[in-house]
Amino acid sequence: MRPACEQIYNLFHAADPCASRLEPLLAPKFQAIAPLTVPRYQKFPLGDGSSLLLADTLQTHSSLFLEELEMLVPSTPTSTSGAFWKGSELATDPPAQPAAPSTTSEVVKILERWWGTKRIDYSLYRPEALTAFPTVTLPHLFHASYWESADVVAFILRQVIEKERPQLAECEEPSIYSPAFPREKWQRKRTQVKIRNVTSNHRASDTVVCEGRPQVLSGRFMYGPLDVVTLTGEKVDVYIMTQPLSGKWIHFGTEVTNSSGRLTFPVPPERALGIGVYPVRMVVRGDHTYAECCLTVVARGTEAVVFSIDGSFTASVSIMGSDPKVRAGAVDVVRHWQDSGYLIVYVTGRPDMQKHRVVAWLSQHNFPHGVVSFCDGLTHDPLRQKAMFLQSLVQEVELNIVAGYGSPKDVAVYAALGLSPSQTYIVGRAVRKLQAQCQFLSDGYVAHLGQLEAGSHSHASSGPPRAALGKSSYGVAAPVDFLRKQSQLLRSRGPSQAEREGPGTPPTTLARGKARSISLKLDSEE
Image (tube, rainbow, N blue to C red; front, side, top):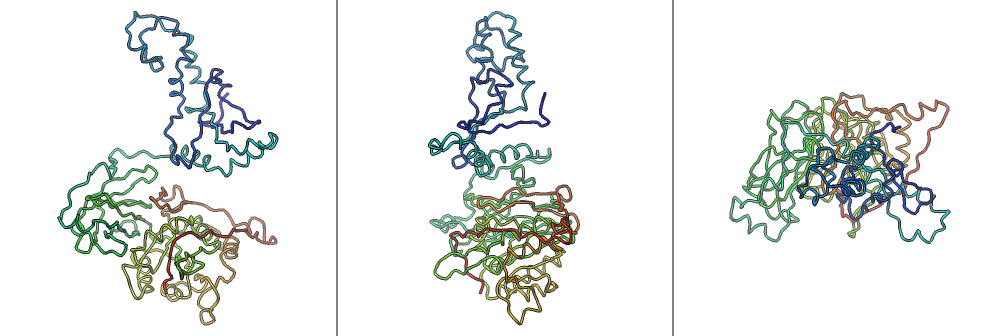
């Protein structure tokens, strides 16, 4: 009798009086083998590298399963049993003897009877403080801890990602950017002197293109907090993760920076990417510092929602060096639009030299992934650059912007895009002269989210097939894997809660917790 799945994982606490092992039930000799330990997430966020395969355990404890063979004169191992022989036994060259069929068949029976290819029993970490609790309370405490344990979540994610990781196509050869191209001498002798004692501040712009159009990437390579040093005339390798779930970087080409530290890299037409979201990494050949961005390829008519970072997310302004708090419910509203299938676009009037700090702020508050636009350097008119960027999305990329969030300063920007007052959401206190041009969210994001889920926006986007970002959030070190191809993995949301419960039932109000603040100085756009 086998379960209707490929693998069973039995997670338990060793001190739980209600817990039990499953492996000895399948193979009694596993009573002498300790269960595997789930690695602590704090120490090993990506796992400790220990093998979970059953075959490795059988080989490690070969003396336990083949103890009858040790009493015989060892024979030359065959393909069936050779994997479980000790090295000292393989070194000898004894006369040929028939293998013990009973013991070998026992190992084969274990492999056939097992529930999957990996070990089944896994023991979780138990805090020492729990030893002082009465035994009768331990089952309840352990059961509750499963749902808040980072160790359990990380373990499950590792198993799922390992199972769903796609294979590269035969025509694609993975290029790991660091070892593949060792550091080379700088093209210009002055470069080594210029960048001494300064840190890199490279950045690349998130790119959105319509399917079938030329795909052009751009970046700027500077050093120092205020861009005091420009990287001029140096080689930069461009890598694209064509299958983000695989984690493999594919080398697409090499460019040389110009006198202002900029480069432009057109993706070759024969290697143009299909609909999806692809992480991009531009690596300086001389010192292996790099800039990161995303290339987003969409279909014509893809629907998007725009958020002004400072105007709609921040609940405070940096005055005495304190950091802004995120508005309560802001993350949930953005995630609602993303779950409905809309492309998320973040705009800000900040210069691109602050990209790392702003993306880190979005990451710390778990904002969903999206396209992020910054101003090109310092400017006295950030609203104009915002408007130009959004106009390019509408005219060149052919995005259909269905809603915009921001501050009163953004009303004119959204009106220029053709958004109606019912599609423009302004956070904060109402301004009398703008009441006819937008909707003020005076009650905050929590109340607004309830209206969205109960109203007409609770259904999925009706646009054409496109790249869907899924439930992914920003990561500081590197973008998370969030590629979704066209209609294969498009989210399809059912009817809203109000429609399911009927017209006579009031919508349920969702309770939201107060958002946290982090240490990051973000100044207002004013």
